[in-house]
Length: 521
Image (cartoon, rainbow, N blue to C red):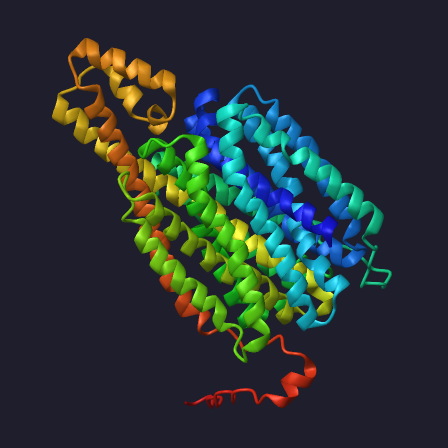
């Protein structure tokens, strides 16, 4: 379990450390136009590999895939640290995403392999979630400190010792457990190809729509193509001999609700983790280290929420309601996030981020545990993979939606400032057109020179840019609140779920099932 936890921590550490450092990386490599691509490439690799390795882990055992994923992740992390251009970083982040997807596809299902009893499994699942949360908690501060005092390149190198320890422990201690002993262990590679093309089309549609609008003919074509490919993939799963996703899971109403909740949760989580550092550093003028410290409660309280969740689960007859509780806290905290300003007291910021983290601590482990309960033992890997991949797909949507909102509000504010100040200089307009001016020291110096030459107030221009970025991120947080409200409506309709031991379950009466309606009524 220590080896699996360390391997799982690689994903969380990479997400949180890199997220804090990204504004500085973008400034150094001069690549704000590829800012969202650095995340998109990682998420695409995740989304593609999670369901495939989840199925392969069910068929061949999970140990070989954990080992291969750790090795690939280590090599990709080293390559990211050596990147000289933003395009190189995006490519290597894609490789990191493939390795991360392999880990996310098999690591959660390692727990039920080792601990088949549901009540015992919850306690160990909390350990896995806690290790993930600890890495998330340390990441923002560590990423900020390394970026500010050493170099942003070390936010990638920090993965190397963790990966070495994970590789040694998994190789030495983790058993090779295989549940499918039948001779036919084929996998649907045509379905895997359809999944890859569908997800790539989704990413392309989201990215193209950001720059050209959702009403653009090519953008509409990409969205329609994504829908057609997705439909083809799921239809193919019903007709292939060795589906990646078992048709019984696709047909289960509870599983479909859990997948939809995974998408919505991933969308919200990504907006919070990826765009909050840009708000804190770009709009509020905080250093990477300060921003990392402010974000730390968001990630620390994922662990705390997971621990509280693990203590409550065995004591509740309707354990599925914990997801709705978490979504309610998310709704409240996202509404509070829309009120953050540069003069908001530090203690208030920390409290709001702590609430966000607690809500995620009630959602993330429960969605995985309930999906595994629906799937049954033979499809544990696929169930865990579905929970993770739906979250990744939601994160990919989050990339596009948050980027559109932030850029649209920022552009609107800059157009207003250009009109107010009567700016005609094309170089100055181009410089102000990207939020990069708020995070790159060289761009700020150039802005000062140009505005001084034209007799303009540099601070007023910077304030207009900050105001536009604040409005955009607040719009993203408001959308997160709306998504949380929708998730509550879905969560209260989840199927009954409990993790009580068989003896306790027999002693506690289950709530009666609602009467089935006749075909006519």
